[in-house]
Image 1 (tube, rainbow, N blue to C red):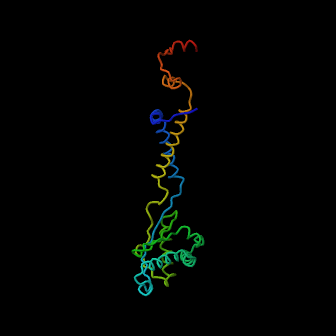
Image 2 (cartoon, rainbow, N blue to C red; image 1 turned 90 degrees about the vertical axis):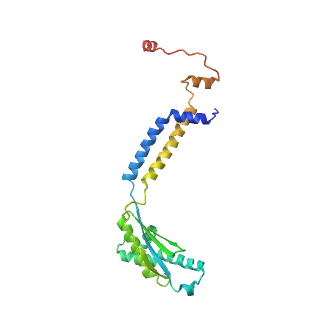
Image 3 (tube, rainbow, N blue to C red; image 1 turned 60 degrees about the horizontal axis):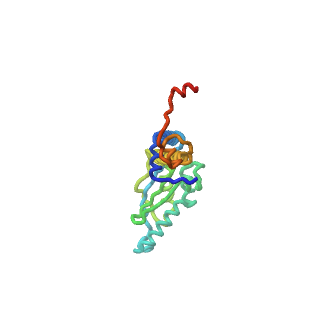
Length: 225
């Protein structure tokens, strides 16, 4: 059975089932909001910002910007080394925070132009995220003095809002996906539903105009019952 899909058909299907689509989409959005709020554990991010002062910059790198960037990259990599993270683990004094675990929750990036280092920690506790970021920064400053000196610009503070999940984003995604899926379902249902219920259905099925109609009398229906 070949079915021709036109813009008119798409619009007609949308308008025909609009209330159903809107109601179910709102229900899905509400469920997504409830799930995000009560069943998803929020995670928090805290960042310590520090300035990297490269030792003997003039003698080592001169005016070569690429060499300076290489040194910065090396320093940023050394922050996540076993030696630095082992030192941080000892400063935290918690056996759970092994170097392997810290490497999963700590990220490091830098601004080559301004020689700024950002150490970010992720945790389910906002206070813990700040403590971890500051501790790893202190460990890096004490372990990598042969590469550069690290001066803290801004210490991490406990974030007031979670980094994830995003309630608005989750609700929007759930709503869009639900609406598209539901619309696809009702469109397929209408396309392949061969039941004739209106004059328009009859015209489309027979490709002939309707010249008359016999009304259904309620009294006759009642007598049949």
